[in-house]
Image (cartoon, rainbow, N blue to C red; front, side, top):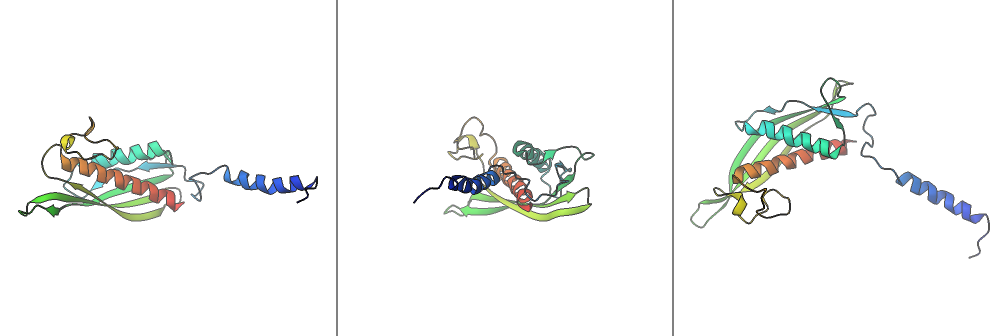
Length: 187
């Protein structure tokens, strides 16, 4: 192939344009330009699991602040609102021993979520989320040889307490991640 003196700029221009367009990527995508913050409304809990209200509020808030997708702010200055309703919590036997004792329980948490555009006074989406967790009855999760909190470490200093509470925490973390992913994928 013979290179002409003027062919190099002709080849570089399309390459630079391609690289320039791929160089900056933002999760803001097709998010309406006026949506730049979110307030997380008080959690509505329709179950008898009263500990869930604070746990959901804490974990959802921590995830949004940590991921920095939208600025978490107070209702007066927010451009969008996240309303979460915990609709149901169920424990169902999952596995049994030979003597038909429950060996493992399945924990299911159902939620309804509405993400609302405050400026235009309309929902951006309304969805239901369900997540499952499993736990063995009794004992302390600090000595069960299972990574109960999903951090890659088995029975470390951060794993202690009731197996059901640990499963509940993992379920709420998963729901929080699903909510964030739904908001990002809406864009």
